[in-house]
Image (tube, rainbow, N blue to C red; front, side, top):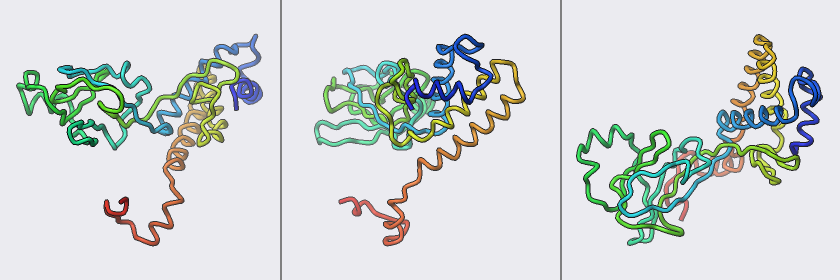
Length: 236
């Protein structure tokens, strides 16, 4: 549902919120719903994606907020560096900053070259060694991550996309969004016990949805025919 329709439905379902003149105004309801969508995306990891960004020669650390603005958390696929000499993507090895600094104490003075490792700490993503070249276009670093939900701001906007685009795989989870709004509204109004129960319902549904989103029925036939194992040759 668009925000206009979702708001109308919320007014029916969340009786404590009243009307726009009641304890929860339309503007506040939008704030609450956007928070619920962010929590939903966090709990279900429903927005897998990747972001590619350019690097600057001799620059080791980049701000995630600038280069990967939708970043929520890493996916298991990790990060890749484009090797321009051999025209191919190379998977970087994931490390913590502590591991880098402990295993190579002169890391900060190491000569630039082709990055082999990356780390993420707070709002920073680091490459080691630091790249020797500036990259642009379809090169640089590609980071596979889960994205945050984008806030709605207009009546024609859909949850999660924050635009007039509806994500088909999330279209039928509006009811769960309502469950999340219920628990937050009850908390705001001081109904602590009722809010706790509603929160448990919301979390349980999100856990189920996370499993649903990971299901791939189209792979069942392939598994039956070839077994659970496969080799890289299967993709050539």
